[in-house]
Length: 75
Image (cartoon, rainbow, N blue to C red; front, side, top):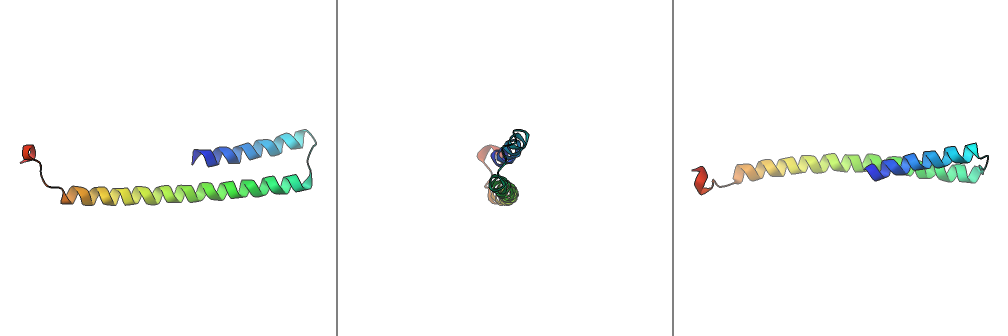
């Protein structure tokens, strides 16, 4: 998730650099903004997937603990 966030920040920095250098082509702006939008959506989807995996892991862990047989030293 951090990589997607870095990509978004990097695209912001690139856009800002081009603005300050007066080297902006309208097509470049559109492409950079499109990439930034894609990056932001990917970050959101990755965050959603991470939450789902955490919830699934919690359920599996709980089920595993409930079904675990006691060890010899725990009896």
